[in-house]
Length: 222
Image (cartoon, rainbow, N blue to C red; front, side, top):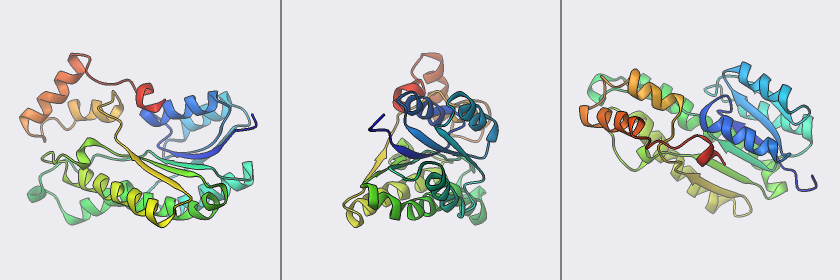
């Protein structure tokens, strides 16, 4: 395709990220897929031969962003977009029960990795007048008890998107709230974190699942 784009996609191994990957690859775009879980990335590489480059690693490693950008250049000779879609919910605890180091670990994955990845991509995105999309969360605007680390990191990501939009006017920078989606994170909320959460919040997410109120990953992913 003449308008085929080259995009780095993080969190590509499952949930919304995997849905995004299939959608873009079916449109003949080229992806550098990033995740800790290498197996699903290799399946994408096998299914969409020649259009996928795999960059497996821990997003808490701030060098991974430059590695992904370098891989895009090596495999596809350009970069048009960056989709920051990864994240972790832990620690699911009240502030009084958590530690600063736990919050730091969460911020390393949920926010500072996005800073590192975005900074690494800027030189190539300036050339292509490309875009950066950040997957945010309703938790960035609504303070769920026990979700302080996650929600505040997503709020910081929203601010990062606004800052880049002003600093880099030729790069489109957008933070997107996808809604409540039926992903592995939602399953963990119901099955792993429900006892740590406030009862009314745990009950709400359980009810959303039972009543069909969750979006399919393909809905925000497409």
